[in-house]
Image 1 (tube, rainbow, N blue to C red):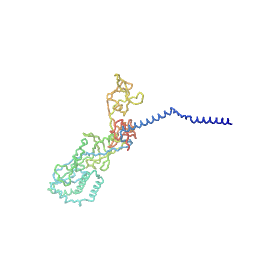
Image 2: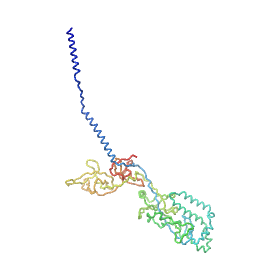
Image 3: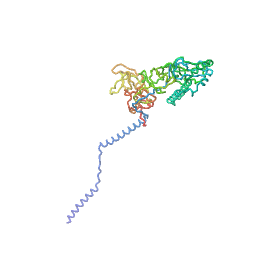
Image 4: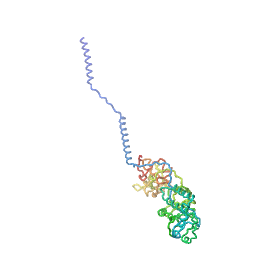
Length: 492
């Protein structure tokens, strides 16, 4: 029993010692080894971050270097060119002078056609004729219903045509009305004069003015009665120098003054300063339809282009309507032409640039690309000749010549013709009208062909090579940028 207990104890002690050894054994650390591909993943992320950072820095630098500008989107449109003008009337006119001193009396209505030998006016030296006429005629007793109707019609017509901006027309109306009243008042003057013809004293004191020709009588003169179209100049349009001079009824005149004038021909003209914007509209025609702004009547006119001493003028010749405007020297007209359609752009966008003209046959392609350019002769450091390819954009082609930016070459550069010994020396320049296209973030010159213009906009050809397209964005103020400037459009 003792041995078995001893043996049992021995086994127990052995286990205890083993447990103690296990508990006292140091704990081993676990080492995890990173694979190489994990290190590569960390480096790639860093590269991406650095790339994004560099891109942002570059974009911001471009933003601050770029010029903020106002852009304009090119659209199709039409342009109503201002075809209104103020012209000077040129007519066949004969001026008649007074033959005595005294009081003026008119007997023909202004703008009325009189026959040869008709009584137009009289000059009363003593004033006795005026007194006798006043005694024989009163306004109330001598105006018939027809006369009053004519007066009323004259006033109503003036009211319909009156424009606040043209107050000068009031004076024309005054003179016209005075002439009408004088004619109505003196409707029976011939019978009165016949009654007084036996009075020898009055006959000697009164000078009668009879028409020596047939025509339309006008009482005002302005010094332009002998004007011919080829003599029209800027001074002709100075209305202050050519104001209408007219004598009032019963005013005192002296011998030799202008009494009246006769317009003896129905054919007449209006000469207006020529507007260059009319060139394309009028160059292919002989006649143009004209609207008179005074009464909105229209008439066809034969055109003649004049180049006088100080500018260009357009002569509009008519075979009718002379009587309507017989008393007007300056007349406002509108040329009725069709509107022109195309690409509509602001005039402020248009600039003019110089380019080198180079024969198109010298244009070639680069050896390793499809870029246009030229072969330029150059010299190496050892003095030997060589040839280099210079890439160049073409801005226009015309008459076998291409337009090349002046910054590409220097005057005197020698270009070689492909597959030939022929050379060309760069020197000749020409100008192009164009705008700066900003579609790609920089100012890129694009030439335009202007069809017509007004004060604010121009219509240019659409679909042209090297030109603009619909919805292109261009710089509104073309003078504010230079070629290849970085630009961005301001947000409106």
